[in-house]
Image (cartoon, rainbow, N blue to C red):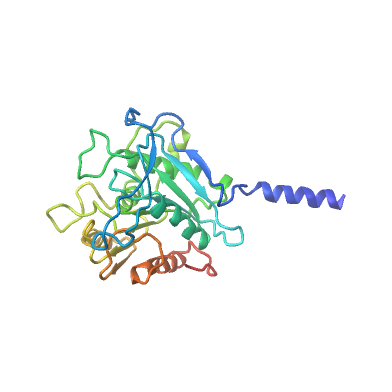
Length: 312
């Protein structure tokens, strides 16, 4: 009888956790059918390598894997080791100018870092490239639909995925940083018509992390972009940027920080002198690679990490 009871308890405990490991992440579709405003006529989804750039443009100069021609948004979920798990989850938005997704540098590698500090990393494969009706040089509108739906979907799966529903944040890089900020500040208004009960669940992230973001600054004014606003319930936001970024100049993060501070929203800003764009989470000799440590400290102070969690 004791053996049967112990076996039953073991099965119950195991069934409370997803059985997917970091080597076999779970992939789920964001939408139950076709995504809103999706014609699906941009060609087959594909993976390619990024162009090799020079050090004046980016910190990581060698080619890395990109994903493009996305018509079916997905979530790819990586869980941390159970003994480290804080219950916190982060939706990861890779950058790519709303044309591509830097899937390796700003997706998979970010999930590995998050797992190392006890956080579930969930990569959002949002729709790229821009569709013909989306203005070049402005943020595309369909990715925000995908991000809002993704936040509600993750929260709806919190119990099933071993996540605390009030500890779900976002991290984004470059255009993905704009997407994280846009989601964190537009939670009170859906950008698509609700389609099921999942859309009745809050799409407000509990915190947002934006790294070398673009599209935050108005083109000809020292103020945030006209498409952005900061409601009173905007969550805490962490900003990091390179001081010599010529792709997305640091003013994008500086002006956002000042606007958040004026609105009374908790925010933290880190500008790294001489750093360029695209440093991701890779360790390097440059001080910009320490932003992950600063961010983990910030998350711990906000109550989203265990005190014993270690940073890379």
